[in-house]
Length: 192
Image (cartoon, rainbow, N blue to C red):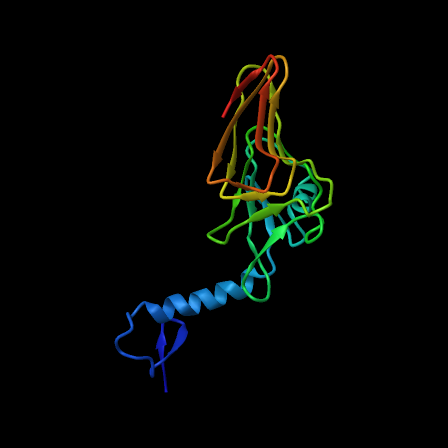
């Protein structure tokens, strides 16, 4: 016998001591888990969204590059066993470094961890390069909820003469990099 809970059928034989929300959480987790195994990346530009199931650099290419105000939403990858997979040169045909102009936000889409990794032996020196803008004021560039590893320099922030770069790295985890964050201002303004 099945009773219904909203639009989901919930078995009526579940033990009565379980909290009433648990069947909904379990059903939602199972449903969401199946959808997340594939992974996808969206570049949101105003009312237009460019989506790729291949990877980050493919989504950026579909959008014709990135510009200030864009948001890149990355869906975490899971393998068939539910373990995390990485966006890398070997698994998703990523091309590094991924160049992020001033004023762009790059972040995980939701709670599924996003790993951006330089595959062993790939020769990748930089995963993300945050680009400065000419002049004294730069829109904020954000990296949020990402795990980056395997590169010589995971994230590079660099300004030249009369350039500015303002960056916020929120909940970015670094692992297995020679240098996690390489930041240098050569005659410009750099705020991290």
